[in-house]
Image (tube, rainbow, N blue to C red; front, top):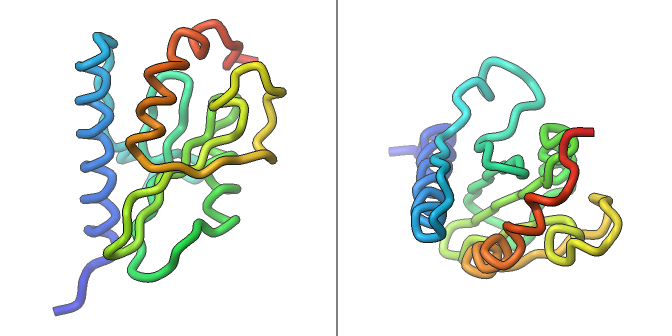
Length: 140
């Protein structure tokens, strides 16, 4: 029986939302996220919105690195927020691509310098940088 790629993607988005909600609860952050179901109706919307970030999730059968089109997609949907690309391939660990300034908040706010890490490492970056993100300007 063939796998429905849309269902596979939706299940991955739900898994990421659950992981993020567990993170928020553990950190005492009063926020709960869910899949952005409007993404199927409108263009340039991310999969999951969290404070300061726009999250795009990709789960594919084969590969080992993200596609530049995925990064462009999340950067467009992020606007002035931090773009986050979470990607996974079958039988491989989940990876997260973020701009360098999300890792080092003293860097210039540009999406051209990126870094890729494990999901667990990204959650640690969120934990360490959350207070710094609160000080950054994501509105203009």
